[in-house]
Length: 70
Image (cartoon, rainbow, N blue to C red; front, side, top):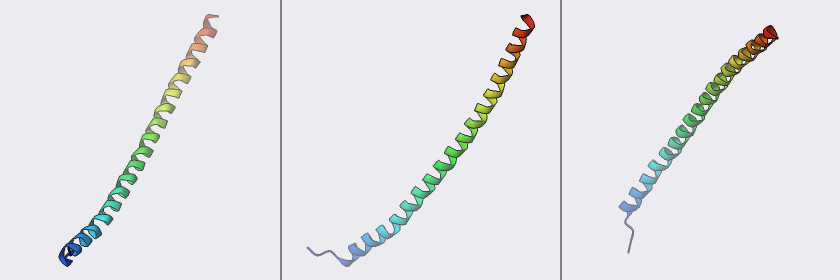
């Protein structure tokens, strides 16, 4: 059975078109994932700093109250 030139060209052109699209798609997905991960990391850091400040004020107030009562 002979493979016709038409089928060979169709398969070749299809592969030539699909391979770059796959690579670009994977690159875009990875870039957006890393950007989103960085954004979430920044938000978590900001949240941790805010909670730390609130807890620090609480401990300062608790110590001041204890000193006042004792």
